[in-house]
Image 1 (tube, helix red, strand yellow):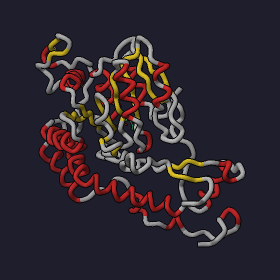
Image 2: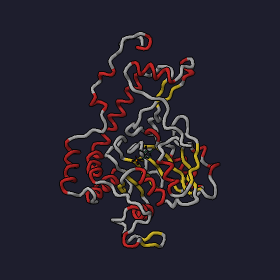
Image 3: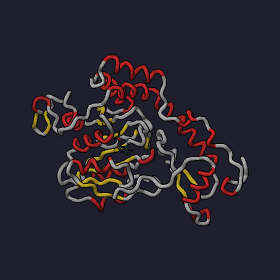
Image 4: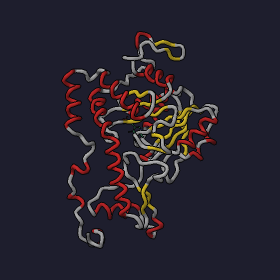
Amino acid sequence: MSERPVILGGRPYGFDAQPEELFHWPVITKEDEDAAVDVLRRGVTSGTDVTKQFEAEFAAWQGTDYALGYCNGTAALTGALWACGVGVGDEVIGPSVTYWASALTVFGLGATVVFADIDPETLCLDPKDIEHRITARTKAVMAVQYLGHPAEMDAILAIAKKHDLKVIEDFSHAQGGLYKGKKNGSWGDVGAASLMGSKSLAVGEGGILVTGDRTIYERAVAFGHYERGGDLTVDGLTAYNGVPMGGVKHRMHQVSSAVGRVQLKYYDERCREIRAAVDYFWDCLQGVPGFRPHKIDPSLGDMAGWYVPYGHYSPEELGGLRASAVLEAVAREGVGASAGANLPLH
Ligand SMILES: *Cc1c(COP(=O)(O)O)cnc(C)c1O
């Protein structure tokens, strides 16, 4: 490699000539294709036989009693919130730096999000900024494992327990990741995640809800899974003729659940490979001023499938060099990169 960056007159290294398949996501093999075609040929795209198998396998892998498949992650979050009793007039404390679905689903149920700060290192909900936001209306806390980084779930749960609040985990960025030995999504009362095509666990449009709480599971079924909730009683009400209590339809597409079964089989192995690769990248940058990984201390947890590998940039270590200048230099090497995360929702 040339000693000088391209932007200062050096020769390009040729990063843009890297094999495309290296960066293609998701990894799709003949096994995924066969599973998808089988659903199409059998004419069961709107059935639940494959989805139920996927759910059983997901629950076993997740280590929770229940897993419920969804048409997307936004729907899974809506189901999780309603199952926790969130409704008109309630407040849910959650981060502002996240994908919109972690927050707008709350408004969709007539409740309000009360935004709390994120921690500058983890980029997840800061447990120190929760308690003073609790009011008589607060019903739940929404934690997001942002960009693969686990939230401090033990601290968040302790606060929630003290104030009798439900905890919902949006683990869309960090399926399968561990925090203090326990899987993301398994800490709170309920976990919900997207499984859409660009996520770490990418099965196509789809989502999953996981919980160890039978009541939450049944409420989630009654809310949007009319095809299997017909005789469930929720808050003393039995659904009329299998009508969903939420007036919504949350069923998962079976091409997604079929691909999901295959993806799940190889998921942990692929995550390990990705983490090794991103760790290697950051090891190469060790000692370079200005840059360090957005990564949890390995003694506390892991970065799951490292959904979007991010780094922290400290301009003061490079004489105040602006992030935009760094990005331009990186772009001139033929490498794609961007600064900043999701725009704060507030
Ligand atoms: C992708 C995502 C969702 C929404 O999931 P969809 O499957 O796109 O509906 C929710 N929360 C977070 C944090 C996400 O990244």
